Length: 479
Image 1 (tube, rainbow, N blue to C red):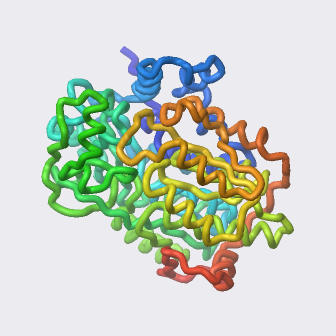
Image 2: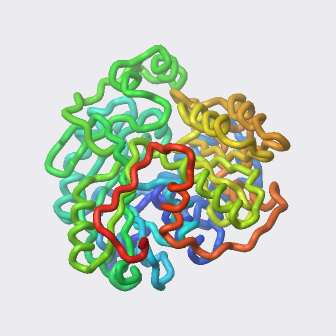
């Protein structure tokens, strides 16, 4: 009997940040836009095709079912996990980029602001983490002990076959309530470059080129289940540690609103803080990068920051500075969230990018603080990702309207159905077309900036950013 082979890209979730950011970066380097988060027509075809038929006008339970269905179509059977090979996934990721000389390459944490930095510098980004959505039933999203117990055997199969990764099994009943009913979030992190990342670097990184390590230091209280198997309850975005591990009035209200029999969660007791599953960087990969660079004469620099959104103000100011040097007025800002990002159209319409992890607290305050300390923007646009529930800490649409009101001339949502948010699932197709429909300006795609331009900007900037730039090994391309 012939068995259907699972292609490397079909192991990962396309509704995840990593896959979207990887495709967005590679699309820009091919001078292409990032339509429909890069996956038209599969696996989000049901949502995308129904967008024009008014999916957002359907009753709420139907919309939630469609959202769950879109996730269920991507899941992997736990019986097949022993077939997974992380190196094949790395080969696919590296293969998305044009094969040509690059003065630098970024490797590490998923980050939307880093995507725009790669676009400006014209360089690839290779992710450390990926999300494998594993099919499972019979586990209630409000029962973390059930999820942990279920995961032990599938995790063993995955890790036995892949000694160069660690598994961060995450259950977030806040952001991921709907998806958690049909799948488990198995996030893997590479601990070494592996043969395919090394091959890509040796083939495409210029002699003496620089490897930027994108090192997000975000930690989370977690439980070590076994060697390289970590269980994480909750995640960044809205709910804080107290909400998740001790309970609160807003957690009680949330659980009651969604018909749960619980009024607080009872997760396994954390035994330490470790890199956050989606955004945090696992240190062993940095050590391997340094050793590889030493052997082959490459430079290594580390971009270090504590929170995923810490890089966003720096990149926004960098773009504004660069636009003005190009003779662009730079009076337009576009706020992105999660996987809704578009480096191609950002550049074509001369917009300053400000990436937000989610449209949840405290991102509204962080964006507002940035606007308060910056020269005014004539136009402000916002793209809001919908995760499907009125969760703890989700920022209401009225608050986002208030922020749009800070524009001197025009503030507008980009592809957002204000009445449907946070169940605006059609936004995953509309965000892309909203750029050319909303903004009339058109600029040619610029040539890539040399990597040392970032140092020039930082030397001239009058502001301090919560981002460290550490040179671990000197490279020729920066000097």
